Length: 213
Image 1: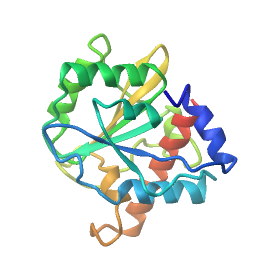
Image 2: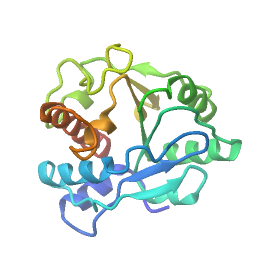
Image 3: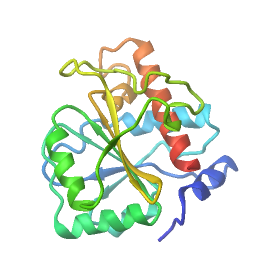
Image 4: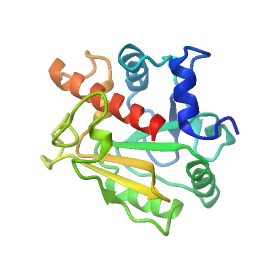
């Protein structure tokens, strides 16, 4: 297992040692690959604004693989079904208990599936909506009203839900927000630059919080 706690990776990154990689989680059931440029752009934005040294070439890891333990931050997205086998759920649980972090961004349509999948991972935990006062919204960039609304989807307000284990946020689910679409190359989505910057800033806040909590 490469990491003990995420802060070790953040400190190493700030000292400009070997570049770290963010990782995209590959799972069964849905289009896990739907935002191919998102993590590259987020890594570059964090390098420019947080002083990190992420490798823009992110890794792709399968949820049941031991490879997930090589990466302190996993990102997952898609539009529909999410299926975790018993072995995959146990592997992900061990990863999150061991110090890893999972961010799931609903690209529209994941909601009923990711809730069931994560209940399999942590049957004893309940998703809690993060209040606007939570530190993840108040890192380098201020988001006094919580998550930014990047894409309309069903027109509902964006919400951030978390799983806390022994006081540590191990999982964040961003719903009705679509940060990942905002991280993509500008030509992929016809979004105003202001929206794209909001998404990247919120992503940087998440990275900063996760690696320092």
